[in-house]
Length: 155
Image 1 (cartoon, rainbow, N blue to C red):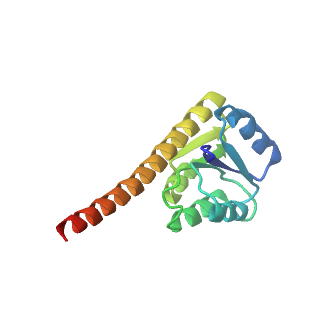
Image 2 (cartoon, rainbow, N blue to C red):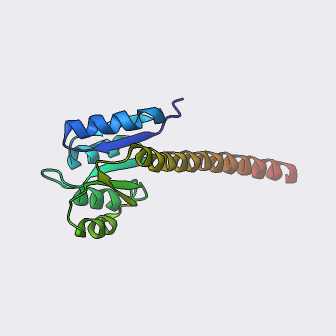
């Protein structure tokens, strides 16, 4: 079983994806690329992700639209989104980003240590939540087995 978390990297620029992969490779997780909002939404249909790093400015569907679509889906509404934006971007971006469902903003060019630290927190949180879900399933199975045994003893 693969215990690596998936991290979705969404950016229309190849050099930004390469930079993200270089910075995050030391976390030893599965880094999945998407070159557009549409591609990101397709990726979310098939896999579970720990966190999404989402560029704000992309042609076609921008980061805000993509985030809103992600948050509308039941399966992905709790997925943390970190927006990536240029330093000289519109001050309104932060408000729009948080309104669309972002948990954080990181300005480009980003500090590698800060980016890794933030992403690793969400990977750890994802792994703990996954572990809790698995333990819940086991406890329910054990409770059902105990109820069956109790019913047999009473019979």
